[in-house]
Image 1 (cartoon, one colour):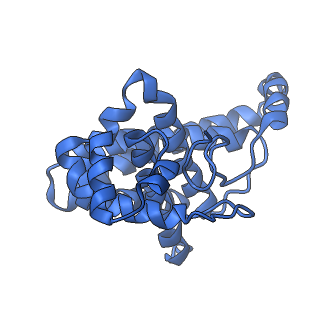
Image 2 (cartoon, rainbow, N blue to C red; image 1 turned 180 degrees about the vertical axis):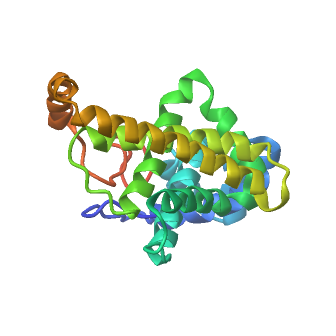
Length: 240
């Protein structure tokens, strides 16, 4: 788990969270991302319950988010070490998505429980923010330097692709998840076709003129690159 530059961690929350996440995973398959699982994990990890309450102020929900953002951090590290320059760009994106799924392959039931948790209306915003962070992690690792509305459109498109791939993967019984790999390639091909259409529209003088207004608005509100969501200090934790 990473910390936001400039933030101190005097209570050792990052290390506490890592220990609790690892201890929680065997329980999640049976009890979900719940306060009950968190209590078991805190006991199993032998951490200070008071510190754990600081690390997970919303209980099981923050535990699930911590796991998700930890996996994103692992993905960023894995992509930084991968030799991707020889691949077509669409293949780099596919590699990144498949790598993210491989990182959670051993905890498929825990991921399934997380999907169910974030599908609840009360938690939908947190779930959407987590998926967006995954898409942002991938684009940043692949060297995205877009500075206009493309910053949003790229992440929105990839969020949709990753979300659908995740759901497909949860039901995939094929060897080495080959069916999911093929599904990811098809979805990326669909996105690339859309990007080609968008490029043709941009070359059309009339269409380009019509898009100047929306582009200008998005340029003013564009967020920086690979940063945690604004209300999640460190790599995952919500402000209290």
